[in-house]
Length: 260
Image (cartoon, rainbow, N blue to C red; front, side, top):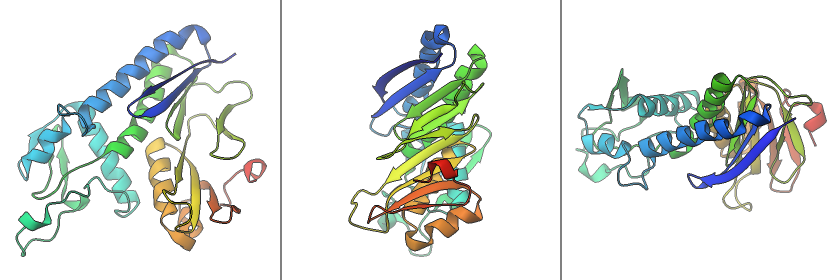
């Protein structure tokens, strides 16, 4: 038997399911706390977000909380694995203030050592999307470990599982399609084109060992045009892509039963 709850937080719909219905209220408290910590650390819409201090440092090392350090490390990992296609250096890079002898800053210039972060001069870090994916992983694992049960946590179009698998498996709805069974201990993320009439893909869905990688891979593939399937295949990722004509393409690792 599955217990579940749904609410809206951090600008996204949140869905929580547990294999022990009696633990649902405690699980929700754990997840809400995890989301609140992440939001306070990096949501740039908040004037008190901790990430503002890092961006104001402009080349000066800044001490940060363990939660922000973890979120920044996840953002850096996503940048490395996608060769910068997903990057923590936001669009607000102040190129006019950068002397001509210096190249524009990139994720390669960000330094994280213990609890200290250095953002390069001229850069503005924005980790909102990878932070939501990281929090999906973090919240699911924290609730599963604390309550010793199976947990599925979904924030927006990214879901992660942790703990024991329920009978029948975790069923996750795909955008515009049927459910897919998500193996225990894995994550799934979908990315949709802002304009379905542009680019090669309408929707890209990726299953990966963690939500940060699933989300980063889905976003990268969405903008890879016709090379998306080959890019996903080289990492052995299970993925489903819907093109502009509504045709479905899958990687070899995508389960046959969910290919349509």
